Image (cartoon, rainbow, N blue to C red; front, top):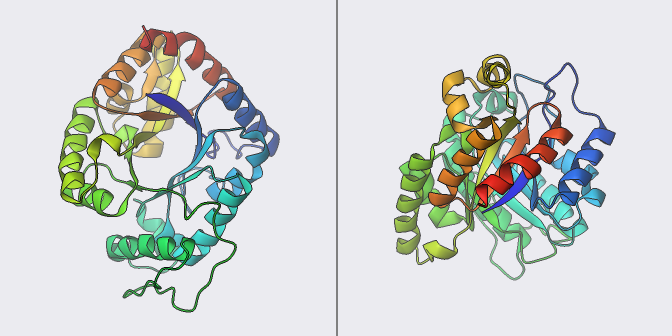
Length: 309
């Protein structure tokens, strides 16, 4: 199991993060040996939210050799052709390091903002994946669907490879896991929507769908995204993070978040990671809540050694 980080796009204070802070954060993550830098995607949110692909492209020069990930990007909301163009540019400029995580998104507000029916999101997502693959590949037939078509569209320059790997985001529903097996090159789960036991169960069910689709479950990568992080030896501070910040933002019970996320004493955080590793998690994507640079240092110094014992 390895560790990546989310670029801190959310303004947990009154303002979104500044450019220099994003650069320092990225440089720190690269120096500390984190394996991936990820961005999430929303148009509208309860807190200020920087645009993910734009922010990722802004810090490319500081990313070193880290994988670059969208976790997830919203092709239905953004439009698959426009998103394919943006992600192809990131892949080219990074020398082919992009992993394109895609999903329908869970916010009806995003769909309302672009005048797309929320109940069409899954059907449109299926077609959007086919659209991106057709646009990124050479010598393939155009994609033609009920919602999207690539006929007559030659989107150059194409990515550095024959298209970045596409990972599908799913919280573990049967339909979502079938979609992941059918359309994806990897699976993205959500930290605050799963437990080690639930992840283990979903991974086993995904394995069945992968085998039925002719794919090897043992070679199918996964990652757990949005693992919010705040290591502290003060239990009252840990409770405060969940009660006043994460609970209202994620609309989940604070106690549930305290159990699932890496909030609390380093030993407590390490225990959660050991359980996720035993359940088959291969990559954890961390998102520090406060004092991001210090939290990345703390995680490497105080938590990882306990996991590796």
